[in-house]
Length: 381
View (tube, rainbow, N blue to C red):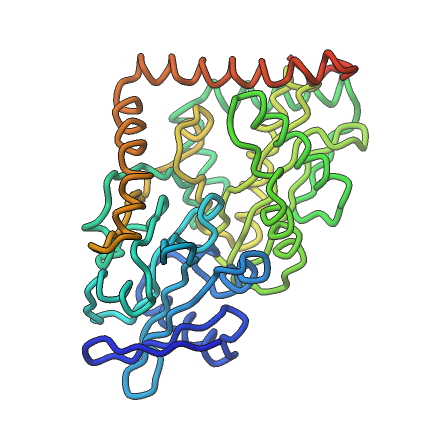
């Protein structure tokens, strides 16, 4: 399936991700490197191709000048031409990959793709084509490891001496009271991955949030990326064991130099040992030794991110909307709710009340499970 359109001075081919040729993918990566943007794996063609295998609406607009690719715009298309960032909901870095100096009109690009709107929630900084359409700017904390883990640990001790000391003490206590602690940075352990998904699903339910792993396409996507051998976009499963039992795990994506923090979780039976934090410190050390220069912790508030980060990137949330029926429908369906979330998020007291309400909703959802014979174990609240 190939569609063709014309922008002023550009030819636009709309392809399914699997129709990208090896040369297309090579040019995508070369243009990405030229742009100077961090090599985030979510904006690598391998991520788009993987999403294309689990999301039928996935597309890529290939911008050509004199027959040569000068840009790539991955997206998903739905009813009424309503578009969204590729992998929206799990993608932590979004946008177009354009050769430096290319000037485009965002609505004109959407028109060439037969889109009435395009929604994003983790648009990376530097996306001059789309940033003017952002409704909100968010902080996305990162950990810089370019100078090695020891240099990072020195800074962490200076900034949060109690945090590092207490976490290492809990790791020693875990070893004494449970059994030998072992960490594997890049594990081939399907059982640990299943445990991670179960822990994460329980966390989503407990906190009143949508369970991502209840969506088949996300589970399939994780499986595909876990088997990827692409050096610029492949899954890494890191596992912390105690007495040979997984107690914490993380599944993330990495390129040669960037590791994106994606799905972390731990067994709540061992919560008093903070196994998630122990895992994070071990993972940062191993990632630095493996050539990772930046760990992107992703947008969204979390106390542990504030403790670990060295700085913040800026990401953006919003929509490009064309003045057509599908664009109007998107605006009516999304923008009022987005404005309400922004209102709550900017008022800490109200945000705290909203978080408690979500947690209570999650608790109530869990109660029927207990009444029909769900046996409460050490993980349950």
